[in-house]
Image (cartoon, rainbow, N blue to C red; front, side, top):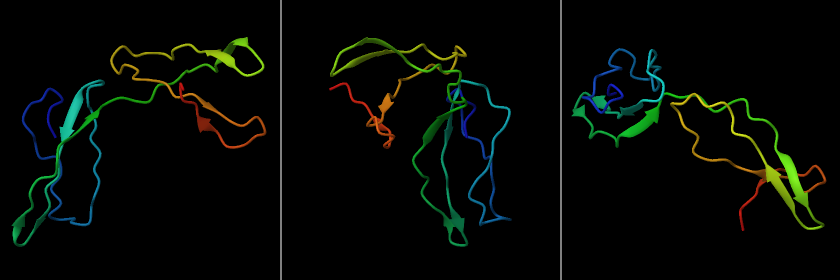
Amino acid sequence: MDDGLNGQFDLIHNGGALPSTVSTTRTNLTTGLPYRFYVVAENIIGKSVASEVTTIYACTAPRGLERPFRGEITTTSVELFWSSPADDGVCLLTGYSILRNDGNNGPYVEVHAA
């Protein structure tokens, strides 16, 4: 794991004593920073080639989103509006998904712009 600032990688887990452990939790991270991680496996022969690096931001999912409200409607269309949820100013929103059902309590499906 790096320091969230593209610094050098530091060892955060040594599974030598517990080789079946395949997870770890990192705490005291700074909200909004991109932390980079990779994994190396090891056995009595040696170490594997490192995995690809993955970047994970220390953020939580958006919350406080109000339900959408309607604008103009016709017999074949409805216009929707919504407000942005609370923004912490660090973990910026990257998009929205709109879902609808068939009007008969069927499953919800994603609405596409087309």
